[in-house]
Structures are given as C-alpha cells and as structure tokens.
Image: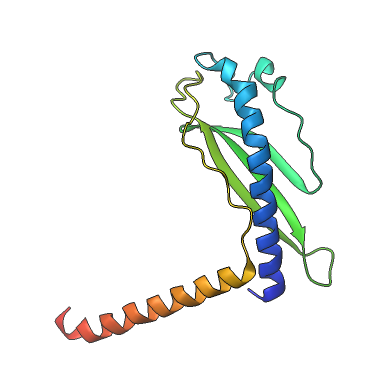
Length: 152
C-alpha cells in the first residue's frame, strides 16, 4: 500500500469512527425502549415501528444501517475516501459495533454497557512505525524458528 492510499485509509478510519461515536448514543436512545420486545419480522428485517425511530443521520460519502445476526443488533458503517489523481479511486472503510446483546428469536436484549469510544486520531507516522515494529518482530520470530528447526 502506498503512502497516498494509506493516507486515505487513515482519513477514512478516523471519519467512520467519528460517525460511530456520534451515531451510537442516538441509536441506543432510540432503541432502548424496545428492550424485551420483538424487533424483527419473519424475514429478519427490522419491524416498521423500530425503523421509524431510527435517527436520521446523513453525511456525505457515508452509508450506515442496523444489522441483525445471531449476536444481536449492530451498527454497520461504510465510508469512501477518494485518493490519488483519479476521482474513481476510493478507500472503503467500515466499522461494525454491536450495541444490543441477548438478541433471541427477534426479541431485543440488553444494551451493551462496555461500548468504548472509537479512536479518531490515528496518525500515519504512528501506523508506519507500528508496521515497522511488527515486521521486526516477525523477522525475530522467523530467526528463532530457524535456530530451532533442527529440533522440530
């Protein structure tokens, strides 16, 4: 990955995390009254009464939706960040935050209490330094494995 693409990836991650931090409490507030109630239809989509309370949150380049799976309800976000000389090159970044647990047979369980604020200040220099640190650690592991090779 080149530096221009990494810059787009970092910008996209910071933006999507900021949007998660803004939208997460709005979703909790809107959906908390439905704890203990059935929130999905037979096709596993949200019921109309739930859809009508979802907050309006529109930002340029951002798509989001509430997803349902066996683990519960989650906030899924996707953002595109253009990069390079061509307007058709994008870095897609997404986030998935579970915000309700104990989802069972369409009945909404309790709110996750341990949701942390998503980091919004990733820096390119710090990521490059971590990548270098990781590569050095991997090299060290390979060297040790080579030394131990005769002993399986």
